Image 1: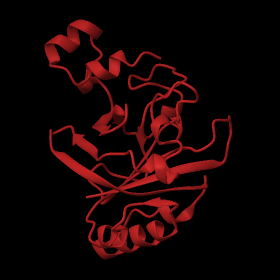
Image 2: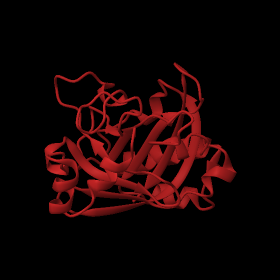
Image 3: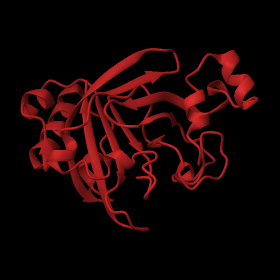
Image 4: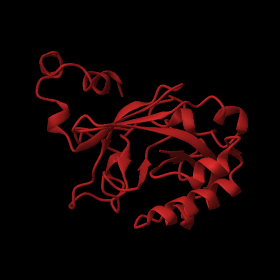
Length: 205
């Protein structure tokens, strides 16, 4: 899949409309634009509509067109304004698309190359999340599936996960304990179909 349409979504509307017909940011179900500095990740994050299956955007692009690469999307149980944002995307297999740069982020040498995650919502508000930790888990890992957290509960969750992570920042305990929002990016950790392994990369604000 060409990365061009996604790049065009962040250009001025007039230029974008001329280049991709009516395929504009406003014409999608995107809730935000996500970039991770130090990587090629720069994509819209989609919201699932009620009639869509949970994995719809693993097989469709931002405009609902079938795509092997898919598109990042927010967990159905999460609102875009939530304290904990949980976002999924393919690891890109051999192409490096989508969350491919995060596939091996649980290795300390890979994690150390990640910069901040920048989340720009549809209103234009920007939240900058700092990398906290990364780990490899099973696909049904329960610790990350907590959404209705108080501020204290969110910090406790971040601390608990970071404590078990294989890669993390030097001041991870202080950073996790003071976080007010948490962004978790999820992708396959193995370059193989139907693998149950997942890489989680946590960022805090």
